[in-house]
Image 1 (cartoon, rainbow, N blue to C red):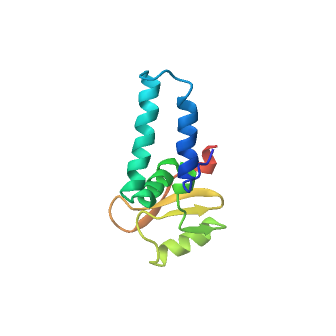
Image 2 (cartoon, one colour; image 1 turned 90 degrees about the vertical axis):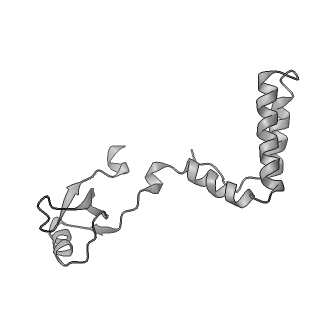
Image 3 (cartoon, rainbow, N blue to C red; image 1 turned 30 degrees about the vertical axis):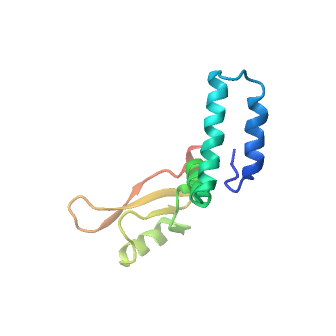
Length: 124
């Protein structure tokens, strides 16, 4: 499920208030909902809502969206040619024929190689 980081603050506060009406004043639920509402008001009052929205977005971003493939190759031969061309950088994540690989330094430090690193969609 994706979440809307551009939520309507007034609607959220109204929703918290509606939910809170179901609980007795002074109950733990009442206290938790009031704390959440006041925290949101505080964020808005100190003009940090944009920063909070970015934090919220990053907090809920699915892992699959946070993985970035730098290059895609149809074949292993194409990928090997790129790797030996000197254009590759250690740590890059690439897709070769639908599979993920990370560029790493060879053990003896003689150059770069591909390390099989499954992409999120491969593990679904």
